[in-house]
Amino acid sequence: MMIIVTIICALVVALVIGLSLLTTSKGYAYKHTVDPHPDQQATEEKNEYNDKMAD
Image (cartoon, rainbow, N blue to C red; front, side):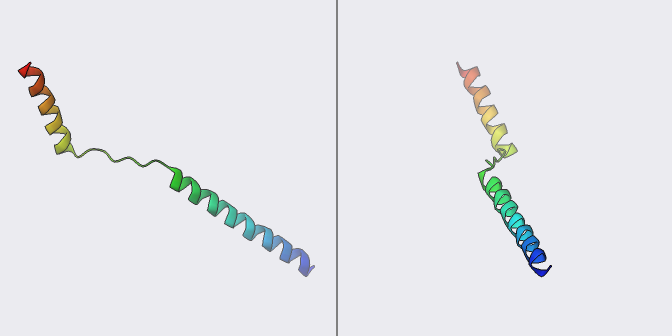
């Protein structure tokens, strides 16, 4: 009886470790992006508008 409990515990531990590694791997593979700062975006749009008007 004790050997069955030990085997079940070992399987549960292996499953938890495997799922943890899978989750960590997917987390590191995710491509993170950063939105531009609103002031920077407004300045770029203003510059593009001025360039169009200058032509």
